[in-house]
Image 1 (cartoon, one colour):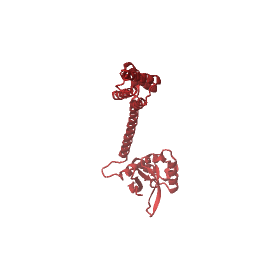
Image 2 (tube, helix red, strand yellow; image 1 turned 135 degrees about the vertical axis):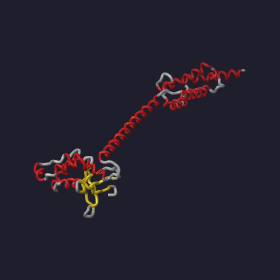
Image 3 (spheres, helix red, strand yellow; image 1 turned 180 degrees about the vertical axis):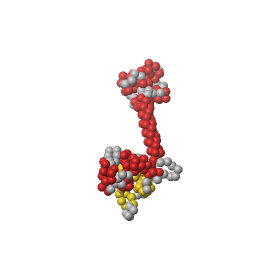
Image 4 (cartoon, helix red, strand yellow; image 1 turned 90 degrees about the vertical axis):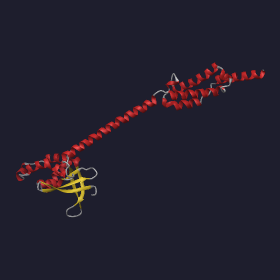
Length: 268
């Protein structure tokens, strides 16, 4: 009950039950109240209320609320969203017998169709605000804004996804390239025995080592040049270089070169 505002709204010389949900702002009319004031008896009210509840479109606006009864205690009441009320009233079946027995019904029904929803809406608005039509316009505008926001957010997500994919797939840039070449040089110096070693000073042998390290990178990533490695793979490339091991033939050539010079110096 704390989530509802309940009013008896004057209309056409009588009072209609109206309910507003605080959390949504939606306004509902008591179905029994509307049909009773139109002139239907209790059996006719039940029949037409059931027809509304079975209708595929109208039923979406029907809710059951619990509210204080004039006789005390709480009672359940079926209510209809005032946005659905004009359509529901337009679908009322008026038989020839009813037209004969209820001569004022047609005229009264037309007034309910035209004004009832507007009057009920106005009852819940502060002074100076407009009625049902303006509420509907505002709700439609709000829905349109929400749809536009959702559309923009979906496009932003797609763009962000494309951007992240582009970043992952783009080739290494200058900073990553420098990091890879620096790691290759460091590993090459280590494999050759240091910058002062004879193997390092042998340009041909030094070139073989660097070429083999770069060759290992190309084999691992399946590329024709290390520059084709993706930017997102730079860390992996560095780890591969740091784990590099000389092939046996190259290792023995480096070892022999460094040993021969060492022996030559001892012979002196």
